[in-house]
Image 1: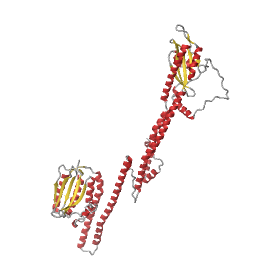
Image 2: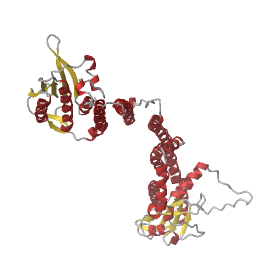
Image 3: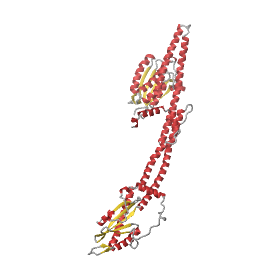
Image 4: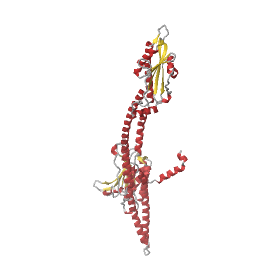
Length: 562
């Protein structure tokens, strides 16, 4: 909504984001004083504990249960006292009219109720207040005591600050506004206590009221009966001090548990955040050092022993860094080789042009020099084309689709093609031999495999003498292993020291008649293709029993399709 209302603000923010450079991001990351990830972990772990603490403070349902239990206790106590009054303080018999003996009822009321700390009021059948335990003496008469002088006020004992805070929280969180207000009247009547009126009708009743100081007043009324005749109503009242104390103790216990859980949660969260953020920060700093490195080669810290996802990330970053350094070194080496290979024909071309430009040069010599110029230009064109193909090869191999290749069909078509060309140009016979059982299905790409076989066959034909034979054989390793394609020629073979170097970039050692026709990248491209698809290519010399070299053999291992 903010972005819709403020499109200018949105465009401004995006523009600022685009102008941020990696160095700015690095400075901003190092300028953080606290980890945002640590704050999130702490917040997510503290919220449940905070909810537990709030639940400890808000105990309304538990308070309702305590109120109900207290009212039930008052009703039981009232029934016991009312039963005693009905048996002792009643004038009359079974066949006469019964009425309460007010004096005896007041004395009994004082003796039975005063020790329990409950205030009792006794109403007559007509609704008249016969006695109140709050103003009765031990003998049942009204007890009058002088008030203390104003200069000597009676102060209640001091209350602990924790109790005051707990009581204040209890009053704030208690749903006391649902209860009616209690008003202490000088001459209370039955109309002031509906529960007492219900008791005169023969029913037990209870009520809860709130006093001016915020405390609750619980009252329970029961009928006083004799021979099933209601003679009066007894009402017992008690404040909620015991309930408040019980709630306070429960809150203290739960808050103590919550505080302990909070402390443990914070410590564990900090430990968890440290185990996550610290290695990530180390990896980020190492990545910055690698990005900003010019001559040195910084290393990614080794966190693989952790055995978790961060350890996996560390291993992946280390592998990626090694691959990047290898790629960078390869690119630098490739660039140096390209510069060297391009410099040779350019030097020859420059020399030929400078000599051909001399006015005293004979026409025959100028013609030979111009032929050299044309040859060097063709060599440069071929070299640039091969370099372009080699530079794109890696990306094309990663994007290329892997599918099933029929090696028999691929090699058969290639041998037919080269059989005609080789016979016409060099008088070389090309033959295909199958030594494996069908099917001949390989895993890879037919276009790239065709490029490999063409390069190897072209290389073999360049060394094959006139009238020789080139044998292409398709076999397979046992136990459903990979296919093996061998290309045997009858040429001079390969020097033993160069059996591996021929697969390096720009290596080229050929007869003089083929000079300048090859860039030296063909076999290097072949190895790169085969290793990408999980295969391999190698070169050896075929020898006779007496050790004489019969020719070269290129062996290509092609992974079989599943």
